[in-house]
Image 1 (cartoon, rainbow, N blue to C red):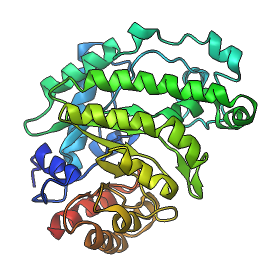
Image 2 (image 1 turned 180 degrees about the vertical axis):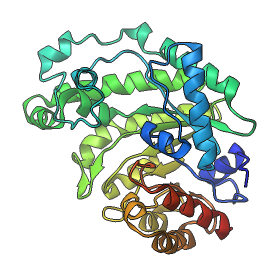
Image 3 (image 1 turned 90 degrees about the horizontal axis):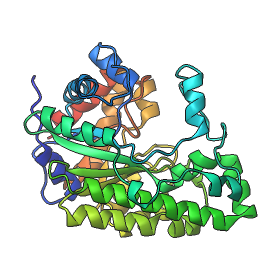
Image 4 (image 1 turned 90 degrees about the vertical axis):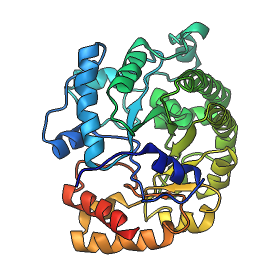
Amino acid sequence: MTFTPNVEILLDAITRRKIPERIPNYEPYYNEKTVTKVIGKPFPEGPYTTKEACRNMIRLVIEYYLTIRSDIISIMLNGPSLPMKREEERTDKEKRDYLTQRDIPTIFNRADYNNYPWPKEGEMKLSDADRLMLETVREMVPQGMGIMVSRSGIFEMMNYMTGYENFCYLLKDDPGLLDEFANRFGEINLKIFAEVAQYDFVNILHMGDDIAYRGGTLVSPELLRKWLFPWMKKYTGIAHKNGKVFTYHSDGNFKAVAEDIIQSGVDGKQAFEEVSYSVIDFKKDYGDRISVLGGIDVDLMARLSEKELRRYVRKVLEICAPGGGYTVGSGNTFATYIPIENYMAMLDEAEAFM
């Protein structure tokens, strides 16, 4: 069956303006290795700073998103240059797959912070590569397919810059420095979201900001209420003023700040796992006030047989789909270790449910 994208169906679900005619799939991230695995073609090498390089990459990503029956293509924005030692290490180590947030902090203390080459006022904007990517996507996107743009969040960037262990020391040694960090990253993201919201062909603004783990939030809810949510309210305001929707991703058990997420104006929350805060529980708790995006547990998608997975997906759909405000999708992202047949079985169950 040929899939025909229709971003309005996805927007119906996320905005809860009407019950969509089908349950759409929402995957705000893609993994290059998963794209290669699903499509069977090598992912083009970056950097994507020329028209030809952008087209080669976007062509493959569009094919991938159509294959997983998505109504949108997702683009990650870089924004101004924020050099990090962890990224230098990633290059030096020949594409090391993963770096922990302890690896090679860039900023240890206030002196490092003051000496860092922060972007100046006029530099807090989309990069030339961002603009080239957006314009190329606009030219290539199929009829009916929407465009989502994503930025890393405030708390996540603070951790990347300091390393989580050093971040914890700073909480005691120089908490004011972390306040400055949060406001600086908050302002950079504000400028980026304000600029990209002007593109009439962009439908969704998205921010990924991992603030929690299995046991709860990584720092106290009070700190997140100071550092993150006032800025997030500004981001959602920009999105809504320009006719866009705003979605948010965080892993882990975020129960302590679920109300804060909703009060900030977020249209849809993505990322759930059974061992921390299941999608079913979140739907029961807050599904009448915010859309619930994805939530099919990644661990179960990887480990269950196809028959067992289908049974689990039907259970989620029976609770989450009625009344709208729900999209199917993984609890985090289509990871490389998820069998393709299991992911497609999830989509088949969502299609059959309606």
